[in-house]
Image (cartoon, rainbow, N blue to C red):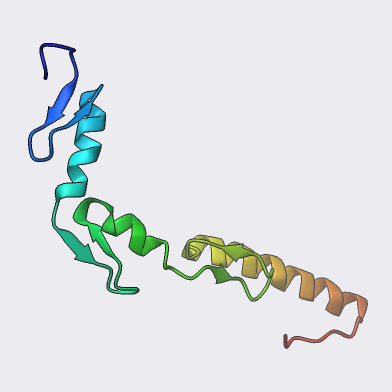
Length: 102
């Protein structure tokens, strides 16, 4: 902390910051960079995990066509499948002709 104005100085580059949090955020810029295994972009180790998550392809459900950013859990898949099967059972009871393939 600089006693003359109450701010924080980063010793490596002498950049000045009003808060300790901003000083810490700046310090990340001086860390060694790590390449993303998907796109090769160089990022600090602190941010590489969030960056790689951004590459995850969204999942589109075959039954409801909804797009999910995270893979569905087994219980969610079971609930969707059960709903689809109930719908098919209803159509069969009514004698409605339907297609099962997409």
